[in-house]
Image 1 (cartoon, rainbow, N blue to C red):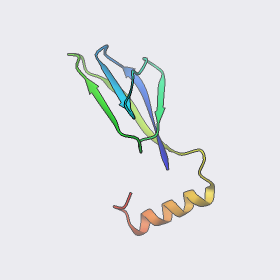
Image 2 (spheres, helix red, strand yellow):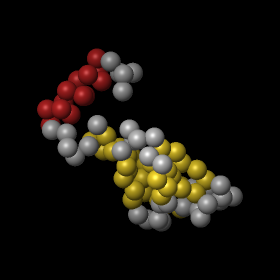
Image 3 (cartoon, rainbow, N blue to C red):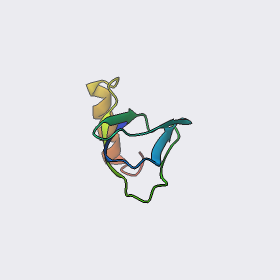
Image 4 (cartoon, helix red, strand yellow):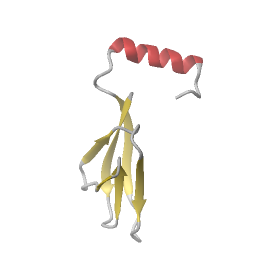
Length: 81
């Protein structure tokens, strides 16, 4: 239903993300977009802090009616998704 978007602000060399078993690295000042329904993990083995701006967007294949229904369902069952 949603996609996660990560913008690498400060990304140490020994950090990254794995989505569906495929490793990725955030280039500084670039975005990485992925489907969070796939198994994913984030790591940082560097001594420097990692700063990632993260936000979610609706999946572009959803219709306005589907988005409306999801929002309506979430109001009725807020802990369901």
